[in-house]
Amino acid sequence: MHQLVTAFAVSSSASNWDRIGKPFNPLLGETYHLDASETLGYRVMCEQVSHHPPVSAFHVDSSEYTFHGAIEPKLKFWGKSVEVTPKGHVTLVLRR
Image (cartoon, rainbow, N blue to C red):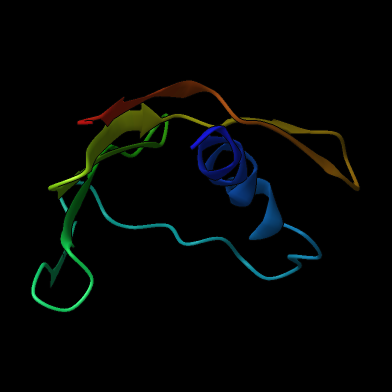
């Protein structure tokens, strides 16, 4: 079980590796719903709760775990470069 939790914790950085395109930037109040409860056993609900500063909240629910939190990246513009510091909080509750 520890290996699964560790893999989950570091998986978010894998999606950012070599990312050079514009990041997803939803409108305030825009939501994303995914109901994969019949095929994969989980449901996802995300909402953009603030645009400036950008804050996205999410909740994932399954029979084995719940995962929720909010992500608020801090951006600094340095002329020709951008510094991104991921901020926020996430909570993973294992039901077993």
